[in-house]
Each structure stands twice: as C-alpha cells, then as structure tokens.
Length: 462
Image (cartoon, rainbow, N blue to C red; front, side, top):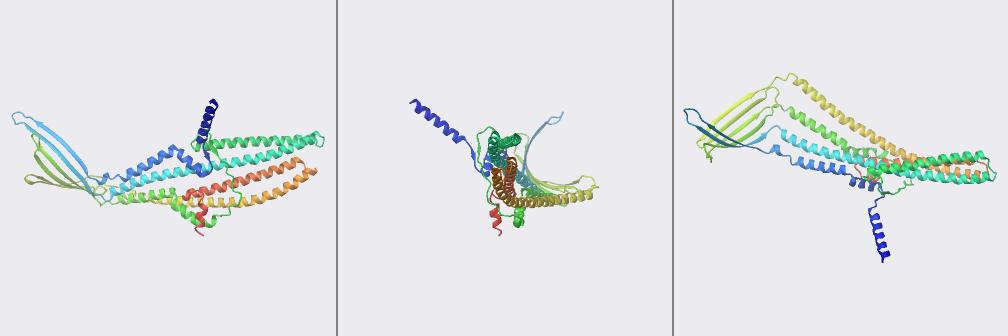
C-alpha cells in the first residue's frame, strides 16, 4: 500500500514538473512567449489604450462652462438705515467661434494619443527584433557546438591511432606531441564555444522574461539545407512601397509635420476673433428665500490673435421683472507693437521647412536601409550557394586525403588542418544561413508582415 502511495506521489510530481516546463520550438513561439511575459510592454499598451480613450472623450472645450457665485453683504452706518444685500448668480458661457482652435486642440490630443500608441508599437517591434536576433544567435551557437564537437571527435580518433602507432614505433615522438598540442587547442576552442552558447541562452532567457536558472527548453531548429533562391532585389520597389506605407517611424514624422502646419496656419488667422456668449440669472434680496430674479446675456468678441490690434468687444443686455433695464457696450485694446513680427514669421517658415526636410531625409535614409537589407539578404543566398559548392570540393578532397593518410603519404597533422578548414567552412555556412533567416525577419518587421510571410507577399507581385 505504501509503495502504491509513493508511486502516486512520484507520478503527480513528475506530471507537475512536465506541465510547468516550457518548450519553445520556433521563433514565433519565442516572440509570443516574450510578449506575454513582458510586464513593461503590457503596461505600455494599457497606458496607450487609455490615452486613446481619454483623447476620444476630451470634448470639454466644446461644452459650455458653468459658473455659480454667492455673496452676502450687511452694512451699518451711523445715523443711517442698515442695508443688507444677498445675491446668488448662475451663468453659462458657450464658445461659439474661435477659428477652429478647439477643433485643432482636440485633433492634436487624439494625434498625441495615437502617437503614443505608435511608440508602443515601435517599442514592441524593436523588442521582437531583439528576440529574433538573440534566438538565432543561440541557434547559431548550437550549430557551432555541433560542428566543433564533430571536429574534436575526428581529431581525437586520429590522435588515438597516432598514439598506437607511436607506441609501436611507427611514428616519431615529435609527430605525436605536435598532434596532441593541436588537439588540446581544439578542446579549448570547443569549451569556449560551449560557454558562449550557455551565455547566449542566459541572455535569451532574460529577454523571454524568465529567470536565468529556469528550466526552459529552446528546441534546436536546424537551418534549411536547400538554397533559398528567392532573391528580393526584383521586388525591391514593391517591398519599399509596403514599408513606406507601414513604417511607424515615417507615420509619426508625417503626423508631426501635418499638425505643425495646422498650428502655424491657425496662429496666422490674426483677424479671426474668438466669440462667446454668456447667459446668467441672478437672485437678490434682503432675506432668504430670494425672490427677485434678473437675467442678462452678453456677447464677447476677442481678437486676441491679432498682434497689431488685440481688441476686446463686449455687448450685454439685462432684464428684470419690469423688462429690459440695462444695455452695456465696451471695447478695449492692450498690447505693444510687434516690432519683430515679420522676422518671427520668416523663422516659423524656416522651422517648418526644416521639419519637412527632416521628414524627407528620414524617408530617404529608411529607403537606403531597406535596399541595404535586401542586398544583404540576396548576398547571403549567393554566399550559401558558394559555400555549398566549396563544401562539396572539401568533401572530395578529404576523401582523397584520408586515403593518403592510410597509405602514409600524408601526415595526420596536415589532415587535421584540412578537417579544421572544412569545419570553418561549415561555420561560414551556418552563419550565412542564420543571417539569411534574420534578414528576412527584419524586413518583415519593417513591412508589418507576419513572420515567414515575406516570400508569399513577393510572389503576389509576379
């Protein structure tokens, strides 16, 4: 009975461990897992969405302003009748026209919220790019470990044969010692490569939001053996048009330029007044409840944007129980002559032109970057084809060299050098394959294409 209980407990623990273990089998899974684990990006997204919602409901400037005032005054004078006065005032002020200022402020608030959300998307995009790079760095390190392990195993096999030949007196000691030193160097390189792989894995775990000691498994994904003959240069124009449309950086720059133009245009509407209407009702009397209402309506016209003559005009009417009892008109102006007004306008034009030029320059720079990425992608394809051909020649050469070693026509140390060159070429192949895959993902991120979908999108333009 105790054995059965123990077996149940062990099975439960094993099931718990297996269920808690995380296995990542692709870069897509790595990006999804990292995004889910990233508390910073979750908070950024939540804040950006709340800003969008807040900007959408920021309509206070279009609504009337309500005011309420209360006053009470008691006065006593020597040899005169005491006076008491109580007053309650309710008023509503509504802006009727201000040259589009409130609409522009509303649009800019929404633009600012959209800008912040675009910044979140840009941050997330950069985060995914770092995940992709670190993921394939780890895949590359795993490939290097395999290549160097195979090289070391071959070298140690040859060392064992050479040791037997030396002990039988068939080889001199100097040959055996020289080969042993070379094998020791290969062991050091292999151990260093293993350390590099472990450090790369630690960095990847941190990016994934996991502890460096967590039991997360990153499955080995071999690079494709077949040559990717999908050159991107014939589709460079189509790819650029997609990136030009989808680029978050260009969208933000264009948005800034658009609202800078709108702000400048509004600031130059110097003859457009701000017009508002104020209606009020007041109750006054000597004691509560107050039963003497009076009404008033007032129109305010303010040319506050006019730097030469900032007029303020007001026209009001008062009504009580006896009818119209008050009419008021006023006009005032206060300011200084804007000596540098025209110079400021020229400076504003230059500033706007600089911003427009910056937008153009950033677009040109991004275009060159995209073309460079496409060229790098196609160069990797050419390199992979050349390396495959070189490896085939190395294979034929190693076959011949192995026969020469067996016949005693070639020293084993020379054969080891050929094995090392073959391993270096294998490393070059792995590096080129890694760069090819990573360059595709980089372009897909810029073009807002799902990972792995670049080739399909290009085929649509055939």
